[in-house]
Image 1 (cartoon, one colour):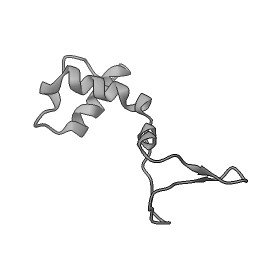
Image 2: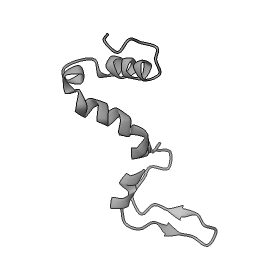
Image 3: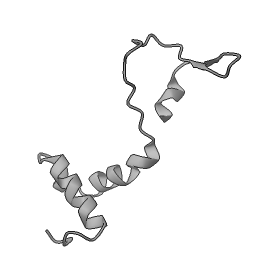
Image 4: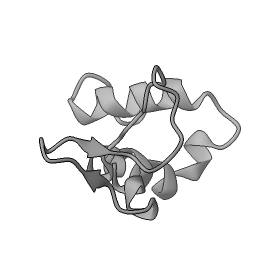
Length: 76
């Protein structure tokens, strides 16, 4: 969501509706992610690149999440 900071200022209508000053398709889905939500994932990737470079990153991320909540031995 912080990525919107690079766009021109949003226009605010009288009814508090925000207008994006970028050409967007009316049916386009915007995938907004707060950087605070992905921080643990990015930290893990940067701290342990050997686990993720050239591998199935999704599988490793699932293992990381299970390890974090105590479902998998950390040595696996």
